[in-house]
Length: 106
Image (cartoon, rainbow, N blue to C red; front, side, top):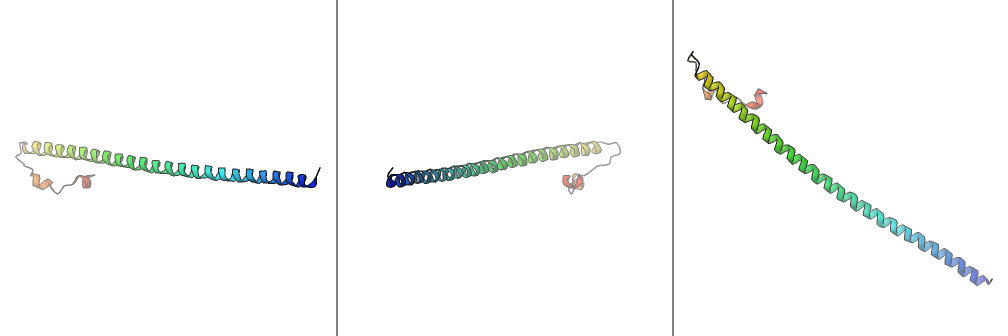
């Protein structure tokens, strides 16, 4: 076999190996970028869901607080009415109850 042919064959194999290695590196880089983009998308989605859950929790807390305040007002009114109807004639003024706050009563 001619030495030039051997050198050409070795150079071809080496060039093919380098091309294959370069292709592997490029493909891995592409996969890494895709994975990073997917991770960023998942993070954005998770943050959005977190904000939605937090908003729902705040709305539920406001609803519960409003219901509790309504029940407190109803009980106060019932108490005032029952005291005003008592046989002792002792009357409770709503003005005496105004400084009362549901937050301080808990």
